[in-house]
Amino acid sequence: MNASELISLDAAELARRIHAREVSSVDVTRAHLERIEAVDGPAESGVHAFLHLDAEGALAAAEAADRAIAEGAPASPLAGVPIALKDNLTTTDMPTTAASRILEGWRPPYDATVVSRLRAAGLVPLGKTNLDEFAMGSSTENSAFGPSRNPWDLTRIPGGSGGGSSSAVAAGESPLALGSDTGGSIRQPGAVTGTVGVKPTYGTVSRYGLIAFSSSLDQIGPCARSVLDAALLHEVIGGADPRDQTSVSAPLPPVVEAAQAGARGDLAGVRVGVVTEFSGEGYQPGVLGAFTDAVRVLGELGAEVVEVSCPSFGYALPAYYLIAPSEASSNLARFDAMRYGLRVGDDGEHAADEVMSLTREAGFGAEVKRRIMIGTHALSAGSYDALYGKAQKARTLIVRDFTAAFETCDVLISPTTPTTAFPIGERADDPLAMYLADLCTIPSNLAGNAALSVPCGLSADDGLPVGLQIMAPALADDRAYRVAAAYEVARGDTGPRIPELRALETTR
Image (cartoon, rainbow, N blue to C red; front, side, top):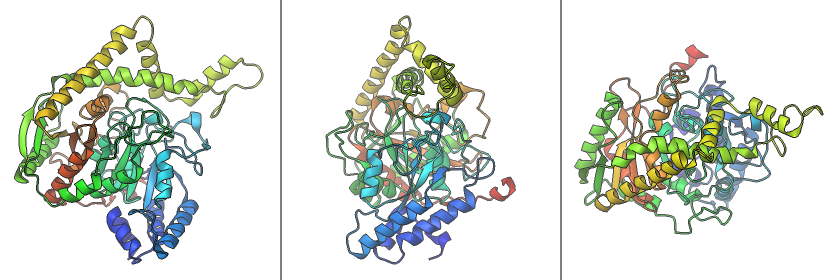
């Protein structure tokens, strides 16, 4: 097979061919490295999905996978398949920057648990992908190293914070990627780039080695081009980890089995709840049109579709933007110029507190500073009860709404985002408009339950991808996979799996 054919295959098919020795992992890896070389480029001209590329390490890992397969001992069903890693996951062999100047060039002394599991499973890490600085943003425009671009239209955002991972998958630079989802940072990029993005149940995938933004909300999860690919990757990275104090000891739900069952296309007996609060004013007509069509398809597959009201979801956005910044203000206090990372003003003339202040001024971007200040204020003695305390009470109400809804429905559905991908720069000076991109995804982070986004066609308004969000109870991730896989098969392809990047040559 030639390189263009290899990059068009999903991970499951690539793995099948690699394990059957129809093609080598080295050939597959080289094809993706060539694709990255051809289309990634700098922020000014290309997709700019990657902040660091480790071609030498990737080819070495591919050679090791080929040797194991030749000996009849592939490490996992995905052995030999390339993968991209969001650059807030620690890696010993590559820099980990969280897209911040304050960590530029930093090489961690340990791998994140999910990275260790990927290596043990024989996957091939290609490099580290771009993100909003410390995962704070909805467009990847807050990266200190420039924005990533949406492969469907290089003038538009690829979502955030994990826009680098989503754009890498959408552009054919990698068949798989890992992201982190704090308020929708896997699902929202998945929706606007036409890829699958999954937020597993909180605590079922280890956060050890994830640079923390908001510890009670952060969750690592898969980015892929198909539901089965996401399930296969989920199975590799999931499971309890004694190094993560928030890790759940319950067995991982049977996500691969559920995706395979869903692909048979029968949803008889499945109760699907349409969240009424996620529609109306502020939602792009083309998004609502694609969502309405998706609801119709689910009904045709045999699902019982009902409307469900979750009134407390209206509190999710303000609650999130008090809880997340509050936890961020605590987590980011470790970047003090004393232990690692950037150090500014250490010339013998400045006291330690001055060096700390100068370093944070130079190292943190505007959005990170904004959230630290909001969080510090929310936790202050005069505001704690009125702001942070009330936000936690709202969080409890949201959990109760989910609990009540799941008593009558197996899953809940909504659009993943209110709009399709917006132009780069359009919301840069309007943080509140930017925050609205996560309107539909935030409740699941606050509640800790499972949720995923699966492509549901293209918007009639602008021809850009739309995502269908499927939410399931905690530890019932398999329900979301089953429904998503059934819908994916029933819908079929309504557009090219990998965009042609026609605008690339004119922008380079």
